[in-house]
Length: 518
Image 1 (cartoon, rainbow, N blue to C red):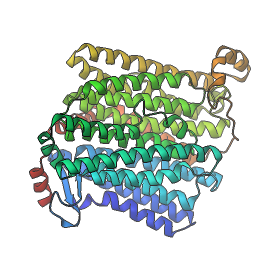
Image 2 (cartoon, rainbow, N blue to C red; image 1 turned 120 degrees about the vertical axis):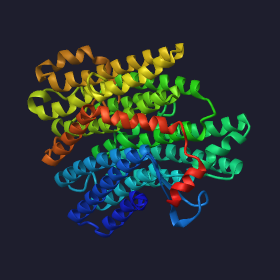
Image 3 (cartoon, rainbow, N blue to C red; image 1 turned 30 degrees about the vertical axis):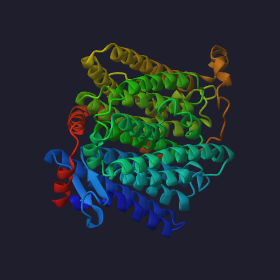
Image 4 (cartoon, rainbow, N blue to C red; image 1 turned 90 degrees about the vertical axis):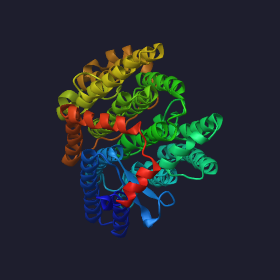
């Protein structure tokens, strides 16, 4: 089974090359992209079953170099689960973009550019998830970031170029910090292999450990959009094409969260910055959701809720118990799927109504009931209403915090509950104004919410466009996946609990060498 591990990274790169060779042959490129991501999904599902039932991770030393001198690709339950979820999301968004491209031509997503860039983005995401050393993790980040620079500026409009420049500058700063941290760790420990770093880190003085720890946290917090380093996200994501925004919101910040998880549980398990993480988590939740409440444009509302819900994941890391880490993984999976689904639903709203401003869109419940349902289900899920997966994940986090029982934990629980209620308020207000409100009620309603008139993009207006069936089907499929997270919450949460237990017992270098030898 170890032979399957490198395919997670190489198949998307091979697919990108084939898509590039195919040039402007749309059907060939679509076929290559769908086939590639489907194969990765099947392989990842097989690997998840193998590592979960066998209880042992899989590791491959690229080029046959002895561990820890070569590049090690490492698949445990966490890596395999995230690759499975990412593949599902990437496939759904790809189908959505195929429908959009068929209806609109190449204006939004030029086919000769989109498919190779999209597959390279996928390769970067998968590489980051299976990297066994810090430098290969850095390479994964850079692969996905290079592709994201292309995707976020597709269409070359003024707003996309402007926000794309901000995104590129912030990403480069984060990458420089990450690379500098790797250099310092290598200088101090003589290795970049994660298993070997975890063994040698305790040999360093506490002050040196803390400095290296904080540098990595800073670099990954920028990528994960943790407050106050999240300033770039609400302006960058909403301007991109709908499928690009959806995949960015669902996956890119979670790669940063994944790196934070590895940092806290494996590299610096003895260096305690939990109080700092608690403060940052609370600030991220509250500031993000308050930003969402102040917005009048659906994509900006979702972008701010994206920031606020990153706070829940940092909260779980700060608790630092096996139950909390397991709950964090479950909530991470939930958020990847639900956030992506909401952005796809908003993409349908934009095409049907010609706007995503809740001040301008009216009467969609009667005009487009299917879109109304596709928005409502993930919206209440993200808001944390029972019995959905959002409620299950938040309850698990709060329960883990309550077991610790310190006053700080109680404050964080209260902050998490307030954030959940405000998230529900922001999303349901948008539902009420855009779907339930009729045209004749617009003037009276707008007078009551006149304070939103000055919000960014409140007056945004685009042209109405036809919605191909494949776009609706892709969104409906993602809604079905969000419901499946609730129906199969028991088995999924059991896997996440096993991940939490395993992460707090890092793999040693000798174990890694044995796994590679096998």
